[in-house]
Length: 276
Image 1 (cartoon, rainbow, N blue to C red):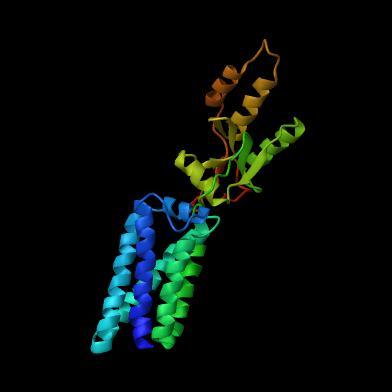
Image 2: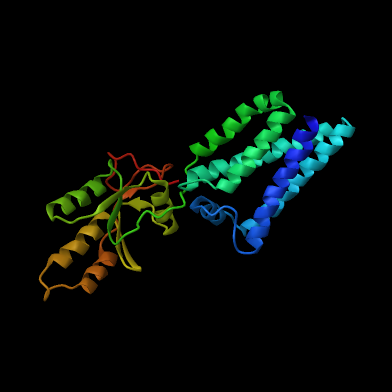
């Protein structure tokens, strides 16, 4: 049983990673699901380098496992390397579950293999490690991480808002009164907060008008309402260019979009909305 758990299983894991590495070097993969492709997008480097890293880890586990059969002093190195790999893969898998619509099947195969090695090597150690593994998944789910998906997929008008922001309520009331169709996106959505923060926008409401490859972004209730007021006037009195110019002339107004800052500028009753 010891040679099976400490040598044979790690070698099978090494072969599993090696086959996928070979496939990736030839521009394919044993994992052809969308989750595997999205997992690669989360990395700062080409995913094949992660395969090299994983193969090195599996080889070390196999070597230390073989040596632990001969000398008990290598047993600690075997278990330290094994559970370091499990902790690493736990972080990777938990992040994928949060960020991607579906996890990487190949990564789940690697993770399952590591857990099997741990189970057959010493099931008591695995039981002791379960709380730590669970803590990794719980803590990762507590973080406000962006998801690897688009929040504005079709042409249309999108309003990033909060239910408690009076400036947002003013815009929504105006849209309802003038029958302007829009899709609301809560500022509590992590992707929405990340989107406006990348534009250095720290207040809501934020209006995004998406048409094809172009998007217009208008911040603040006064600017948004002024934009539509000009568009609603007769053709000879106003056009879209003048409406766009009004965006930059309208006073900046809106509710704070920060979790650490209290709202200002007429938002005392909103309490602010989170961004960070």
